[in-house]
Amino acid sequence: MTSQITGWKIEARERAALLAQFAPRYARTVADHVTLHFATGPETPLPEARTGEVVGVADDGQGVQALVVRIDGTTDRGDGSHFHITWSLAEGRAARESNDVIAVSGWRAVEPAIPVTLVPARWPR
Image 1 (cartoon, helix red, strand yellow):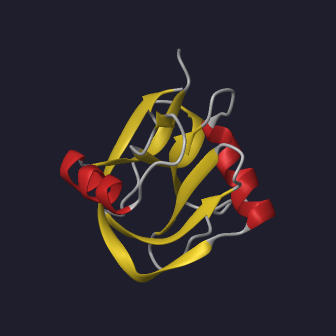
Image 2 (cartoon, helix red, strand yellow):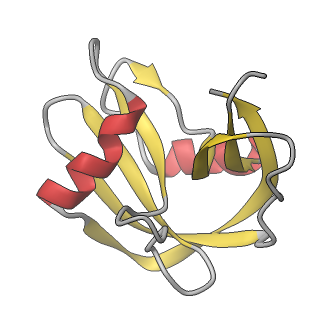
């Protein structure tokens, strides 16, 4: 069985609107999901939340840009990291680095927060 990621996909029209508001700084634009759990299987329940809010931007200036997302009143994913959308990456950088950038560099608040529809989903790891 192939391991999956469980979380939320971002709807195409909202992704486009966010891309217009937050220009990707690095060559590879990701900007398509929020992770809840890694290494899950088909038995893992999909998350219940259907909405979130973009509340911050993190960028290490060296190739990782992410949007911080609040879901059900918190940015805390429950595993010591934050809900986020990996926004853009430079060559050689990986999406998994977004949590480290948020933890080390912090994030700049977005005000007002921007509502975003979240579509519960699973996808290959």
